[in-house]
Length: 381
Image 1: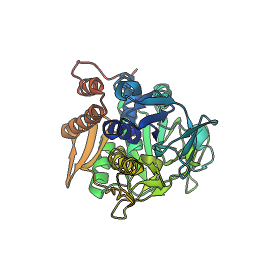
Image 2: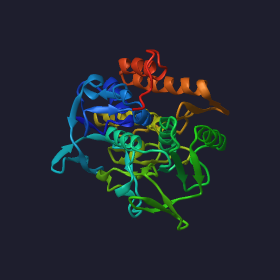
Image 3: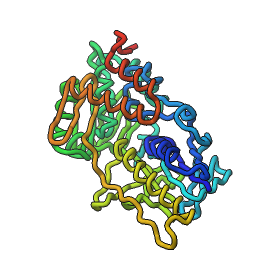
């Protein structure tokens, strides 16, 4: 019997680690990913300012997984048939599977945006953003489109990189507040932290199109710019035709296929839409692991003729965290924290995640780097 995990992001790696601990020895587990490494995506913005962090937020899959790992691109998934197409030709069949392919940057067919903006999804993106920013000078403007957590974080990093120059970092958001998917108290604190960092914030303003030298806003106004970073939204994996299919609280996409993390739009057991986030993906993966185990038991006759009862996912995270340059904002329960307390909490959460996936040395190195325990300086040049 074969169980396949397609994708090794937050959801996929967490799920695979859990399945390694719980599946019977008679079941083979295969993990498929384009890369041989796992990227701690929520720390990628740090690499724009501090390239040395790349090593700490990269985890070799073969060091934390003890199963078959295939480096391949998933180009199509047939969830009802239990098959996935790899690299456009090879067919991988599975008895139970999980689609954990994450999401990609959405450009919404806005003219010129894909051609003239840099997203922030991979190390190459972070390096390109950094190199282009370091070429700017006094009076230049960089525009960050989209003030979700990723946009907030990259704007904060760029603001810190200016040193004594008067480069303008302008963050645009088409909704009425930054971090629009989050509670009002968190939004307010994030807005204040951005302003304190010297970021110009414009909300209620969407991008309509772009060229090499300017963007056009929804109201027809043109804004000149010297660099354009786009964090304006996500869409599904190409293997799912760029869709993020809706799955209910049992996370089932097909009879024996689950969809976990940003690859799907999850509706939890309370009927609430779950925001795309690392925290949600990790928790969904734990539910998916339980449900995959249940289907494996069913196939081996453990449930007799009765349909097994699957675990239902309920969205519940302890809080939210975001970096804003050298500051951070954390919402824990009703409380909103900023400054050193929030920074320490964010570092702890990042290191804690690395520890849970078996990358203990990475966790230690991340804490050392983030808290500057080695006396190093942040890289600006």
